[in-house]
Image: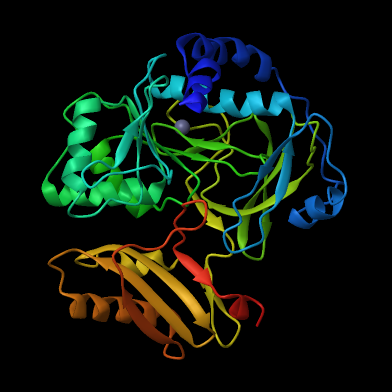
Length: 392
Ligand SMILES: [Zn+2]
């Protein structure tokens, strides 16, 4: 309650929104100096660990990377960089066409108190409707849709996995929003093209925001579905290595932790530097963000096989699925089926699809669950490897 009051006061009222949208634009979008970084080394997580091991910058606000399979990282943010982060989201909302005093639904892994029939909570001051990501199922979906219909949000802030889940149940129930919804703003997880398509058929536009705790690069999807670089946020380079093209960023507004040429370890596809997107935005864009370079399975012969989500494309009766490699020769497929699914057929199809990509040297086991467990930060991971495998 108190937290929500301050949220409303400092983050979510009409005056604050107006200041961010109109005033901060002038402040942050000043033309950035040209950077000549080629002689600087590309740095990575180890640099932060080493450099900030024993020093905490003054006036800095501490943050953490969520660290899913890897160790979490402590990062530092200056006051202007906190403003910048807020500005980058609020100006995106302006682009999307969300009003200055919007109704916002949050579906982002918040732990809230729920009852047997109510899986959401309306905040008294900010008026945000916070919905639980953990109770979405075939039995509860209709209740979620009714609550949405009643609240009529202008925008839904969601984790990709949570909104995909809702969209799948909406398809089954033949449900669509009956009010004027601007779309869904997603972030924090990898959002595959297949899942984006499912979400679009129900909720209309998808606006996926890509960023990271180290805050060195932001890319945001335009109405054409392309991910544009926010040049008012940082200086972004796309560098090619043995895994593909990756995002490397230099922050410009964080004196507490200046990072030059920081390797995000996130990879992209379909880079366009011509400024030719028909949305009118002249900045560089990419077609897809493939995500972290650790979303892969390691085979006995050392090969790394990524992008395994295509193995589940169009599998009948499948709601969610996660792969966990427990040994070099063992893979667990954890899955949530629909109520009336033919699970033996489903398992057979997945097994065939996976064997096609991984060969016969890996033993595939199945584990039927009611929900795929989330990380501590409430995020969905499609591929996880046990430590023993990663260090093998
Ligand atoms: Zn565009």
